[in-house]
Image (cartoon, rainbow, N blue to C red; front, top):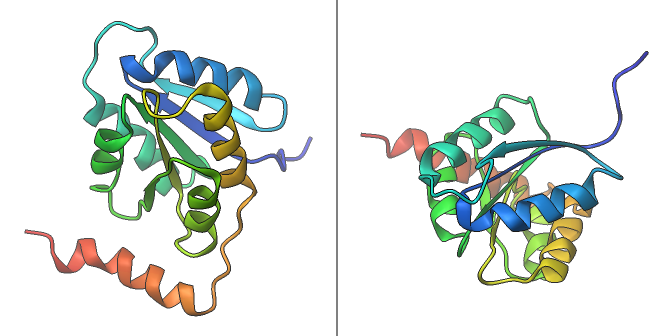
Amino acid sequence: MGKSSRQRIVIASEHEGFGLKEQLCGDLRQDFDVFEAGALSSDPVDYPSIAVEATERVVRGEFDVGILICGTGIGMSMAAGKVQGARAALCTNEFMAQMSRRHNDANILCLGAWVTGTRLSLAIVRSFLQGEFEAGRHARRVQQIDSLGLEHSR
């Protein structure tokens, strides 16, 4: 039996994003291979290690993309951005999600459970997952972004 051609997604959250994560996972499993990580309940946890673990798994190629959820999405995006090879995008609408893929080759989508409702979050996720990198002039810029972590590490 061959490998699945469905996109492989890791979805992780901290406690504030747990409910949204559960709802998104339920919907996305119909069309994607979804792996749940991060908070396993709404009990308080710290998000940095959750974000880094999921992001590293995407960068290593275990998953095609990652979705990280916290209250605002800001903390998760900051933590994910520390991982070399991650291109995390905090998106609050479908256009941002689409452009993050088309122009920035984003591999991590960050969402804020307090900021976007379930229906909008699902639309953002679907737009993100349908987006394809256009390469061309954008490839040079993405390469420059990827090299920033190497050039500016302490």
